[in-house]
Length: 295
Image (cartoon, rainbow, N blue to C red; front, top):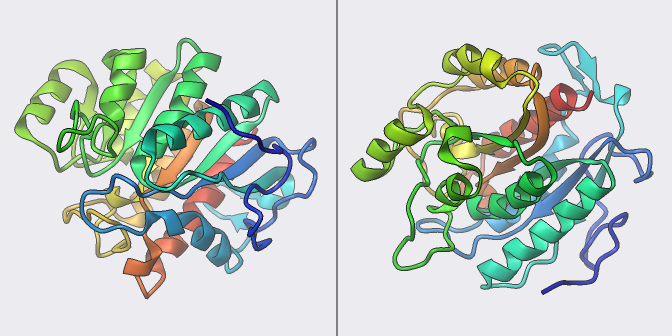
């Protein structure tokens, strides 16, 4: 299966021209490429994450380009916003394959992929491409949920199965999970036996594993629902007891010391949060990711 696209241009014909703040128009000069994955075909509670990529871009226009956390400015790096991948409605397997195909093409052109979700299943396409490019890939999974099911309601392609697919592909010993506070008992038991499992917290346990990840290729997949819904209510399966923004920005500083070869931020459902706080937080995280990971 394949699809036709022009990698250096926005995908969808109806693309409005909204791009992430500071995006260059020169694909060839870009060190990183932002791409949207507007899919919510398998969400299990509240839909709407297909709208996340567009709104994250739109609210980015309210950001400062300077990060006081990292003492860097977006003007110091070059990144290209390619728009959203056109995904076939209701077909998760083909959608994931299109994402994989696109991200693989980015790696062939030595670009750092920065993905905007979309439900968490979209990460499977990006991580598959990263694992092909980097055989020793390690994955950092930041989330409220374990996402370790073999299937959800009979479906192997689900946002509840994404990390189990990753474990099966690269080995659970290369998967690091942070912030988890929801899942089946069996998932928690499996994670404690097999992955590097750090439930409830993010920044401090992340700092503790930096030495063992130093120099290794790392893909970071970040679900917005790791935040407490008091901070980020705009997500499909909100879970109380989560982290707050200050801890996340500290974690970004730690992640910046690693060899991050891919990043995605998923599960933003903007229509659920009329205050826009979730979207604004997501946009700021993308700014921090660009500044932390583009060397």
